[in-house]
Image (cartoon, rainbow, N blue to C red):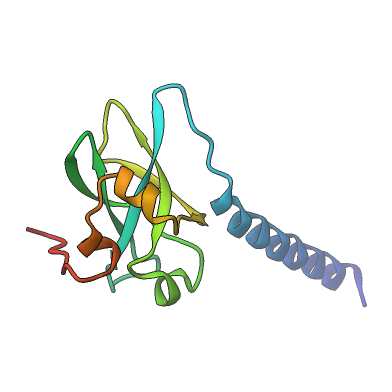
Length: 131
């Protein structure tokens, strides 16, 4: 191979490595000073664009919120709809969340403590995403 081809191959390898590193960053969510962790139910995903947003439903001090959690890891939607995950929110703006896509919560006691009803936990209550 010539030098030009070697440079192109090296650049492609760097890009591929960076893509894998970025994908793994979804599980590294840091909690800031005014941020708290709660549990959110993954309720929907918009079906438009290259990076459709994921929506979570969650409770803070008895108030129910629904928020755009941004894009998730590739293939997240299909196997995780109606499951519960830890999410980070700001005390100042509880409408903004950062999901911890790799931290699923399955303990019923934790889900009840986070504000969810048994109907929501058992998927018996249909969620109106945009009331």
